[in-house]
Length: 108
Image 1: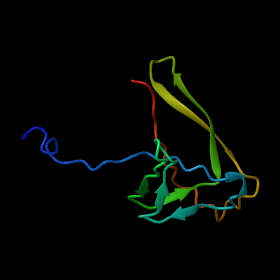
Image 2: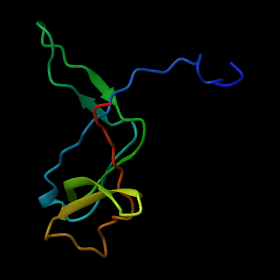
Image 3: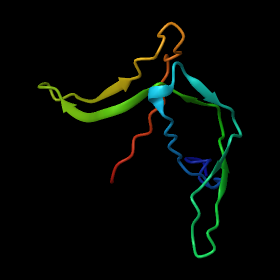
Image 4: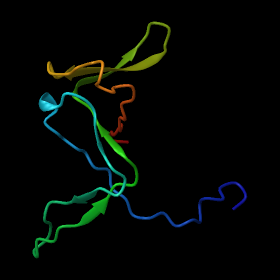
């Protein structure tokens, strides 16, 4: 408990949710408030839908990730290169794209 005081703490159940808005129709960033309700697809024989709530404000951006690659430099350094597409309707003076949250997931 001295090395990892958080080890014995209870961790509430959680899920990672991917929001997929029609980004081509977005003109600027849109926000979903903390506590926004999200329903799962119906699961099981009784078609139960699970309800989740966001734990923080979520910002939807008028962009889409189109490519992600791992790149290794000749000196051995590695980098993840990300390529995005954006809507032609975006007014960049009002877009609010100063932060983009990305969740990295892969087989371990």
